[in-house]
Amino acid sequence: MALIAGFCLGAAAQDYPSHPVRIVVPFAAGGPADVYARFIATRLGEALGQAFVVDDRPGAGSVIGTDVVAKSAPDGYTLLLMSNAHTVNESLIPNKPFQLMRDFVPIAPINESDLVLVTRGDLPVDNLAQLIALAKSKPGALTYASSGPGTPYHMAGELFKAMAGVSILHIPYRGSAGARTDVLGGQVDMMFDAVPTMVEHVRGGKVKAMATTGLARSPVMPDVPTVAEAGVPKYEATIWLGLMAPKGTPPAVVERLNAEVAKIVSNPDTAKAWKTQGATPMTMSVPAFTRYMNEDIAKWARIVKISGARADR
Image 1 (cartoon, one colour):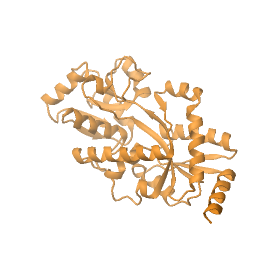
Image 2 (cartoon, one colour):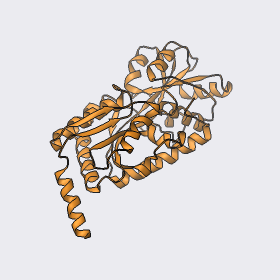
Image 3 (cartoon, helix red, strand yellow):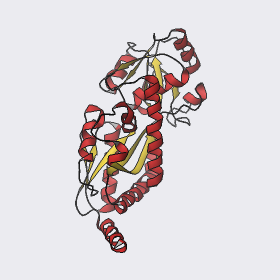
Image 4 (cartoon, rainbow, N blue to C red):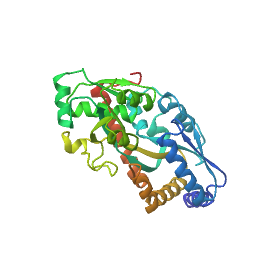
């Protein structure tokens, strides 16, 4: 019987997909998650001979769209485009209607992107060491903006506060545009933001770049040190994206999708194009990606506990 079951699963994977596949993006249209989802969807469609259709379902800090996928049939025809906002939400929103590692199966990572910590142009600091010293001399007086509670921009700030030992007031916005506008306008002292979005403002002198958040320097801002090398050892806070499916999706289908996504993101043309956007392709086996996600959930659970961060502020 086991042999027959295995044969059926293999046959199902060979036949998959036999009709269009939906990729639910639980974030706003036009954002990085939506853009990269459409990139992956187009190329999966080309490789597998069926349409992969992006369905944007934003709201409630990614909970609405994610719950749609959690309640979908585990047949490989409804997938979730997720980010590390999901791993943060495991501890930040414990009463949501799903649990990530209980109700989903990881498929594959897609890419990761650095953030950059910038300050308003007239803040009297020129590097990260000076910023930390200023924050320590005025506990709670400095402010940092984010695109909303639980977002990677928010949690990058909380991680920085915890690891640098500083007290900086979080000012949450409904989206990064408003946060960015107020930092550029000098109403808020600093923020963590996407590198490609901020690079021209840095070059124009509207804000000052203190550091980027990856373990290595950003190819878009090679002259800007990382947070780790500028004074907070081992700091890392990137935005990463991946694909998941409802729990119970046939393993053979999951493995096939993992292999196809790996081919797409490993393409040299893909890596070259993403480099200009500050994104680095990620490839992992299903077990490795599962371990990576569990470690990320644990990492952010510690930061949520230390910082007292909440989904409503």
